[in-house]
Length: 101
Image (cartoon, rainbow, N blue to C red; front, side):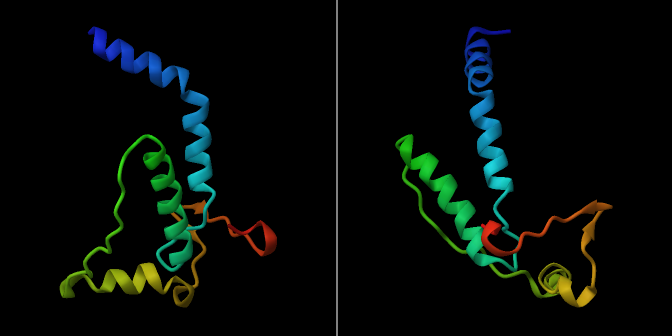
């Protein structure tokens, strides 16, 4: 392994707990496409960390789905109408009340 790769590996190994904690924090924010506040909260959290490192962040909205793929919006954004609560046999956790982020 080259010296730069070793240095990066050592740094990441030393930051493992912090990186896992940050990942768990992001995963704990409800941020489905139908939850714009949650999506913004994830972005805010990531921007906060990047800005603390000296990066400048900018928010932009993505483009709409092309007309030939609008059916994806029906599936992704109107899931309650489809009455499913699972994705690929994995339960989708739901938070209610004060515990909701």
